[in-house]
Image 1: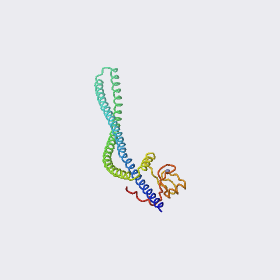
Image 2: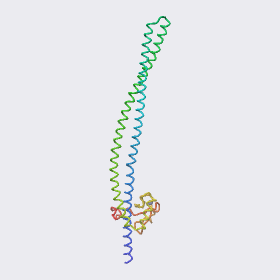
Image 3: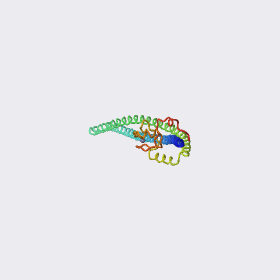
Image 4: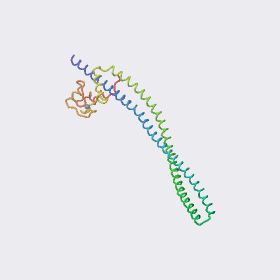
Length: 258
Ligand SMILES: [Zn+2]
């Protein structure tokens, strides 16, 4: 009688410790999720800022090219003016020629200059077309840049709010964790914390239908029976995590608060 009473006490203690471990694991998993989430916002902003920088560089490049074409256009216009005045002078010369030879030379000169002028005019038209095309590109780039710039600002504000809310949640969970740590057996807590460090944050795993739900390996039937009986705290033979019987109604209830 005394013996079974003692055993019952042990079993209840085990049940309580497992419940606390499940609660602590749940708490730590939520802390981990929040810490991951906290990093997402700044990463997103960094990516958007890089995108914005690329757009700004592209626009700057387009504006520089546009400036270059405009210089070329002014140059071509100036040259055309000079050629026109040369044609004018040659035409005056033509009306004052004294010999056939001079006449032929003056005609040839006018012809040469007119050909040169015609080539320059073609070039000026090409430049104008380039300018029109580039101006359209610039205004589209400007619009894109402004749109993205506004998005970055909006997201930045939103993320700052999100971060604040996450910090608040984190603070609550950290307090909850401290309370769990005070309640759980010290040696068990050390075992849990060491396992958590080695096992990417997951130290406790349910076993359902004889399969560890974290490493997905089956555990030997005899071990599974021991687990169901609740003889003592057990580890998965494969991944070494602390295991409990996941189908046990007692462990399905919401994690207890410490
Ligand atoms: Zn396992």
